[in-house]
Structures are given as C-alpha cells and as structure tokens.
Amino acid sequence: MIGLMTVIKINAITVPPDSGDELARRFAARAGAVDGQDGFEGFELLKPTDERTTWLVVTRWRDEESFAAWLNSPAFGQGHRSQAEREGGHAPPPVGVSSELWSYEPAGGSAAQPG
Image (tube, rainbow, N blue to C red):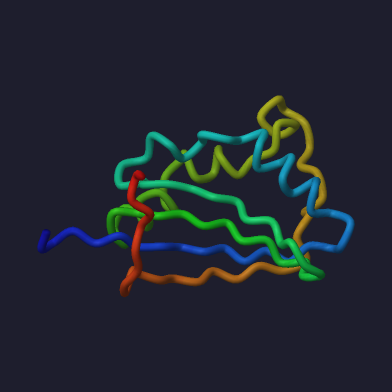
C-alpha cells in the first residue's frame, strides 16, 4: 500500500468546566458537515472522563492535501457557522477558551478481530 497514508488532525479544545455539554451540542448540530469532503476518513469528538476540561476533535484524512483542501473550502466555513448564523442571525459566543491543532500519522497499532 505504498502511497496511502492516513493523516490524523486533533483539535484540542479547552472549555470552562460547565461548557462541555454545549460544545457537544454544537458539534451534534453540524454532524456530517465534513462527511462528503474528498479524502475525509472519519471524525470523533472525545469527551474527558476525568477532571480535564480539554475535549478532543479527532479527524482522519487520506493525506495532508485533503485536509488543506477542506480548510480552504467553502464547506469549512459553512460547517463552522452556527445554526443561528445559517439562518441569518448572530453567532453565539465561543464555547472554547483555547484550542490547539495537533498533527499525527499512524506509527503502529492493532485492531480487534471479529470473534
């Protein structure tokens, strides 16, 4: 499989302790917005299960070019607009207090086999 590579982009979003549910609600409201993008392989929103307040948005892409094309596409801007904005209203205040983009590629691992 030479030439095939998965790129993983993780947006680490820190929110106030009582704002995680709002972050999840906003992501649910735009579920599927990136699904049809060329090179998109998958998405997960990971909620912390301890005292942390950083949620992880994990996306997988065929390659860097696919991710960059999505960032520069009209779909990116549309997918990041709130429901209120899409209906002509004003954007709600941000939920996150900070975010950081991390980039990874698989370097090993395993998958469960059907039993």
